[in-house]
Amino acid sequence: MKYRLVLVLTGVPLWPAMAAAADAPAAPAVEWVKLTPTVSPSPRDGMAMAYDVVSGKIVLFGGLGANTSYLGDTWTFDGVTWTQLTPPVSPPARVSAGMTFDALLQKLVMFGGYTEAAGYFGDTWIFDGAAGTWEEAKPYLSPPPVTAPCVFTDPDNGSADVFGGFNSESGYSAGTWMFAGTTWLQLQPATSPAGRTGALSAFDHVAKNAVLFGGEADVSAQNTWTWDGANWTEQAPARQPPLLEFAAAAFDPGFRLLIAFGGESGGMLQNGTWAWTGSDWAQLHPTTWPPPREFLGMANDEAIGHVILFGGTTGYVYFDDTWELIPAAAGQ
Image (cartoon, rainbow, N blue to C red):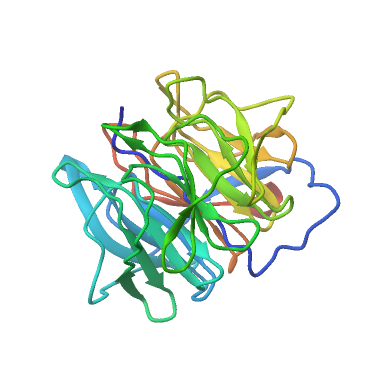
């Protein structure tokens, strides 16, 4: 079991809503462009990363740096550069927490994570994008402490949802939880994916559901599931990516597709770019792309209209690079 997991983090907000179409667009011609922000977070993996609708910025928290240094810093990205915040109160440092925008609270919700000293986290933190501050929630009921749960926006009511994660005592979790503003509620779907950790997950604005794929589990996790707010449904796409662990995904507002990148498969680092069309996976063939990596962060950026990728690791090298996925023609 690897503890340096990145949540694909990235549940994405329901509001403002994307313009929906009857059918998802065909796989586009794309390229990854390496951005040159004047300031960036230090090299790391396993950071929590999500788009905040209120501030119009991507928020990044924590992760794992070189020499097993657990990080507890907060950064925002405005589409041009990164800015480190200095909130008066911050969550304890950790790797592999999950974070998403809660449309009911109009704030980000972060859950879970791990450090070698503290073990598994089961605390809940709320980030106010308007004020740039953290506040610890005190729910009377919470999901079990885990590392690398999937955290995404609920398709039905816009709250923050949690699925899965790992704890060395209880193993791979298969529970689905919803944050009700003051406490967590455990949901009881009729069907559910097998317990797993390090899966990729994101909200699909076109299909109006959350998508989950892959991850590390006791059984095969090379399967695609969707969550409509009431039940999980296993999909039967004609094509799927290889079994990906510790990859990242986010919904691209420009392409109106859920995009996945990187991860590990069969012990090999990946640099494939995949798109979920709502019913099938399509492999994209960008003209340029980031180096292979796992434990990376990815989030949609409404302000610039595309997904942003940051950081990750090869297991030896930690990255601090920032990439944007754009139409191929725009870079030529």
